[in-house]
Length: 474
Image (cartoon, rainbow, N blue to C red; front, top):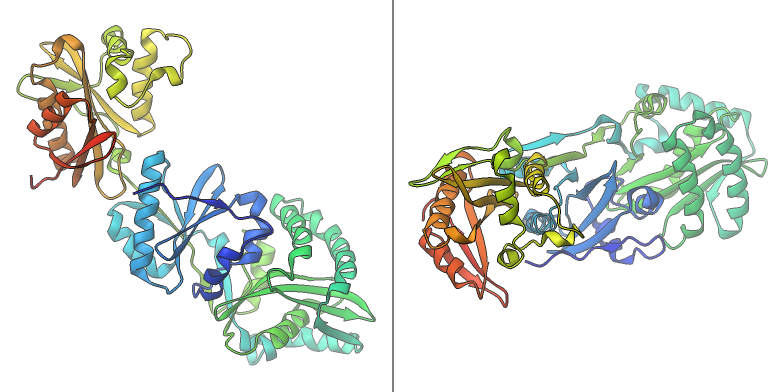
């Protein structure tokens, strides 16, 4: 499988994403044009289309996240095939796999797939979902407060006007936002300031995204401004601002927007999350949401991440254990052998301009396990280091790759076969691995013969490698 090709979500051109957003039924504000645009600088989103699914990659808090694949047809089969493509992509580039915006309906499938995973659903990022029809009249006792605010506004400002914005309104909208901004920035929070910056940046692109824009006016002055986007059966409210000096303007703006833009086929209003702002949370709850839209994070836990230390194993003639401190010089001789290590798949000279001291190679190997990337073990025969065997390239559905290398004077004794076979069996029995993989360069006939004798089956080749696999049933 090839690496996925991600393209930046350009702030101007998001046309490839449009069919997916228009069809989505997850009711998540994150799958929308304006969200992608407004948080582009913060999240650095990029996208790929695979298995008829939209896959969005973003960065937050220094970590890479993949949105759960969005199928055009809401097909679980297509989405799980796209999940497999993401897994393989991350495995090939050694990227830790984090899924975000996993809908509640898919969480069980993900947990079953991985067996072990960290699952979270942060309250601060859940979107508030409302019935659009109820916003048009605020019916019943539960909306008494909103109705009172609406009546108050109508009584105080009989000359109000609500209408869809036109291009010539942009100057007045900008002036309104500057007035509103003075209050908003007093919160002195990064998210509040970032949001205002992105609202201003969105204005020139409203038409290209096909957004709904409404303005509430009193005596010709804009006192409220709202921007929404139709995604499936939901209108997502991206911007909703009203001047507090105009009593009742907020609920009145919300009602008029619903009446004007929530017509045929619109069932829900998504008014986004509260980002942990308790004042905003109280306000959103007072509008009686019918649900908080769950956005699960799922982080698969690979077997290596559950280990606290490397094992010690025994073969017929070998002991496999972490390389000892006193063997640092011999390990450096193994790891720095340029001629022999051309078959290892890594050349230390790519990271070091000068030949490092012996401790460098041993510390590098220990660091690989410290970061849970590899499980390197020294191969000892009669107390002497003869080589190294490694489990590495852990996959997300119980796969791992095995590799082995020997000091030159110990080749041809069958040590590599013993180490590969024993470490593979440890992976099956202790790590719950279902598939041990290996590869060797086509010109390395000795490695090919060794892997076959170690119980691995050759499954294919390309211009560079022969590929092998072993399962518990082999």
